[in-house]
Structure formats: structure tokens, C-alpha cells
Amino acid sequence: MIEYRGVWKQFGDDSVLSGVDLTVKEGETLVLLGPSGTGKSVLLKHAIGLLTPDRGDVIVDGISIPRATPEELKRVRRRIGYVFQNAALFDSLTIARNLALALDTEGNERPLAAVRPEVAELLRRVNLDEDVLDRYPAELSGGMRKRVGVARAIASRPRYVLYDEPTTGLDPVNAETIDGLIVELAEELGVTSIVVTHDLESAFQVGDRVALLTEGRLRACGTPEEILASEDPVVQRFMHRRFGTAAAQ
Amino acid sequence: MTAGQRVLRAPDIIGATRGGLDRVGRGALLAAAIVRILASPRRYTNAALAQAYHMGIRSLPLVLFMAAIGGALASQQTGAQFTGGLPLWVIGSVVAAGVLTELGPVLTALVLIGRLGASIAAELGTMKVTEQIDALYSIGRDPVTFLVVPRVVGGMLVVPPLVIVADAVGMVSGWIVGLVAIEGLTTADFLFGARFYFRPWVLAFSVIKAAIFGVTITFLACFIGLEGRGGAEGVGRTTTAAVVATTVAIMLLDVLLVPLLKVA
Ligand SMILES: Nc1ncnc2c1ncn2[C@@H]1O[C@H](COP(=O)(O)OP(=O)(O)O)[C@@H](O)[C@H]1O
Ligand SMILES: [Mg+2]
Image (tube, rainbow over all chains, first blue to last red; front, side, top):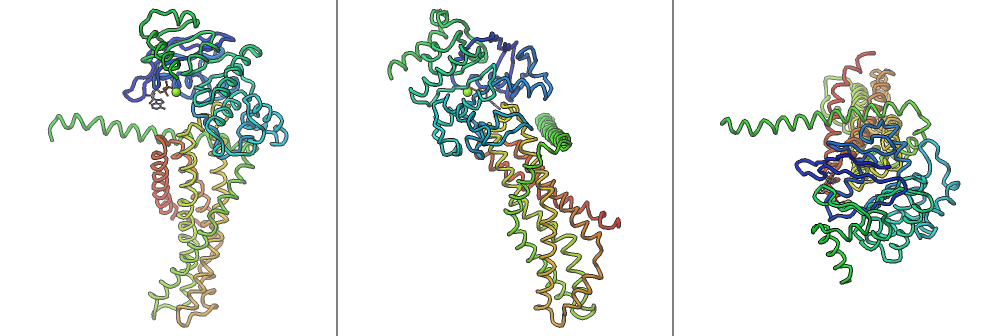
């Protein structure tokens, strides 16, 4: 379970989160929507301690992330996969090494040859060929990098996965592969996840619940049906504008 | 100055001071983290040796060039100023003293700041602003173990041999240039002068200085790199800041270490 309790975060004079309360239940997939720059990525980063709240608490598996010791934090992070919005692959390492680094724990590294089959399997799950293994991130397209980022996030067989715009910039076929993977991990392995997306169609497809973040607070949170039926004008405008543009394309 | 101006300025100074102190605090925390990790060599030995090897290969040509120029200048300048009064063998002593205590370690350090310090700061700065450092944390890895310790240990291991090579090249170059440019100087004179000055402690001093410089350059480059922010332009600023800070630190250390030469 991931619990945000009254999380406030400010950068300089710029207030980003102003009291976010959110609970993601065991096995649930929560989709987080919101305009660009409202703090969706900032919210996700709090769950693995990349950012600490100015006020409030974030609790994962009963551990308070802002108060965790470095060792506790390391253990919690091994249980959480994180897909970065910009992939954030290690540029100086090949794809195989990028993934191997996430497979093994510090000090227990196996030789690359030994992990190759596992690494290749991870790539298959995100619809990538084995021939990218020995390439460097800069030699891949943006969409390919993004999928390697997803593969890296699920390498340690995490119980939680936080996806920061996993399908933005992907072609429809690959976007569907990733959506399929999100559903599969949730259904077959009971993975708990938060998915940040701008794609409303996939949001309603993968999400057990949908939350809308605006102006530093959760404006709405509920099942897809509840969100679509919401009478809040802000929620309606967000949903309709998006559906409008989606329909126009 | 009016009271109003003073009120406006005070917070700036306090803010800047606090920012500086915070930064010193973070530097101390990084140093403490490095020391803790040093206790388990298995986690970094291979990576540190690989770093040392690459650092050595990359900087050797420029180190040799600078050392040769340094030795040549020491010998020529002494020759030019010592006409008359002093015996010519003093040139051997002056070159040995200049090269071993100052030119070898300091010129090597300056080369390494440009060659290694800048590239470490740029690399870690880029990793920071492209969230690769966050990505390391996210997979349960510690950037200090994975990135910083191998570079600092690698620097500590590789700079002493580089300085020994620089010392040797500086001496040889000083000797050859002396023979060619200074009338009447013989090899026997030069060697006599060099031996007259030389004590094992001087060489040890050169090597100790080298190790301290190696750690200083890599540590500051890593620290300033990891503090990087703000895109490609930010990485440029970070790199420049690392070069400036490290140069100042090396020069200050060079002065502070002078008394060490006299202990033995
Ligand atoms: N590390 C940081 N330092 C300063 N400002 C930040 C930082 N991270 C995010 N911000 C700011 O917080 C706001 C929200 O960013 P973000 O969470 O990335 O938005 P999004 O909802 O599009 O993911 C933005 O204004 C951004 O500039
Ligand atoms: Mg974002």
C-alpha cells in the first residue's frame, strides 16, 4: 500500500503540492491525470524518496519514506519499479548492462553472460529485439528508450511499479503493448501501480481508479465511471477537452 | 546607505552564507559516505582499478609534455640567472628541487584538473540533470558506491605513478636542456648537484602530494558534478565551477603542504 498523507512540497517560492492525500491499495492500478507541470512527477518521486515532503508523510509498506534509513530506503526501492518520464537510461552503459544493473543487487553482480537470458526476456516483454542488447541508449529511438526504461523498472520483479508517462511518444502499437504489460503485471502478479498518463483512453483501460491532480491537490479520485459522471466543472473540462482533442485526431 | 537598503541586503548575505554552509555540509556528508564505503573494498576495487587505468591512459601524454617543459624551463632559467658567482652543479640541485617538490606534482595536477576533473564533473553533472542519478537510486543502487568511490580511489591510485613519471621526465628534460643551453655544464656536474639535493623524503613528499592532489581533484569534481542542475547550460556552468574550485584548492593545498617537506 502506498499512502500519501497531507503532502506539501514547494520549490523556492513555487508551491507544487499543497496537501495531497492519496491511498493506493494493494493490487490496485491508479491512474494519475493532470495538466503538465502540476506536480505528477513530483508526487511519484516522493514515493521512492527522491524528493522529501516539506510537510506530511509518504508511507510504503508501513515504512515512512521521508524518515527511512538509507538501508531501509534501499530495500523499499528494490520493491518498487520506477519508469522515468524521460527514460533516464545510463548513457555510458549498453542496454544489456543497464538492465543487468537493475537485476542484481549491489555486491552480488553476476557476469554479463550469466544474466543475458534474463535481460533478453525483459526486452521481449516490452516488445524489443535482442539485437538492441549491445547498443547504447543514444543509438535507440525515443520510444525504444522508453520501453527499455519500463523493462528496467520491472527487472527486480517489484511489487509496486510507478509509471511516469510510460506511453507518451510511443506509436499506438507499442503504447498498447505497454498498456497490456501494465494490466498483465497487475492481474498475474498482483503488482500495485500508479500510472501517470495523458492518454485518457488507456487511463480508463488500465485504471481501477483514476485521480486528477490540479493546482497541487487531488481534484477528484474514483472509479472511471465515477470520474466520467463527475459534475465538477474542472473535472468535466479536463475530460472533455482531452476527449475532444482525441476525437479530433 | 539608508536603513531600507540595509534591510534589503541583510537577507541576501544571510541566504548566501547559509547556502555556502549547506554546501560545505553536503560535501562533508559525501566525504563521510565515501569513508564508510572504503571499509568494504570488494564493492569498488575492480571499478576503481578500471577508472585508474582509463585516467592514466587519457592524461599521460599531456602530463609528459608538461613535465618536459617544466624541467626544461627550470634548468634554463637557473642557467640564465646563475652566470658567474655559483658553481654550475647548483643547476642540478635546483632542477631536482623544483621538479620533485613543485613542478612534477603541480603541473601534473593542473593537467589532471583539465583532463579528468572537467570530464568527471561534466559526466556526473549530465547524469544528475538527466535523472540518471535518480535512476540509480530507484534501482536500489548508491551513486556514491557506484560512481564516486571508484573515481576518488582511482584518482588516489593513478596520480602518484603519473607524478613519478612526470618527475623523471622533468629531470631528464632539465638535464638535456642544461647540457645544450648552458655553456660548460657537464653531465657529471648536473648529477652531482641533483644527488647533493636529493633525499628519499623528497621523493616521498612528491608522491604524498600526488595522492592528496588525486583525491582532491576527483572528490571536488564528483561533488560539484553531483550538485549540477539546469540542463545542458547548467552542466557547462558546473564543469567550469569544478575546474575553478579545484584549481584554487590545489594551489592552496600546495602552499599548505610546504611544511611537510621539512619534517624529515
Ligand atoms: N527538482 C526540482 N526543482 C525545482 N523545481 C522542480 C523540481 N522538480 C519539479 N519542479 C517543478 O515542479 C513543478 C511540477 O513539475 P512536474 O511534477 O514535473 O510536473 P508534471 O505534472 O508535468 O509531471 C514544475 O513547475 C517544475 O518546474
Ligand atoms: Mg511529469
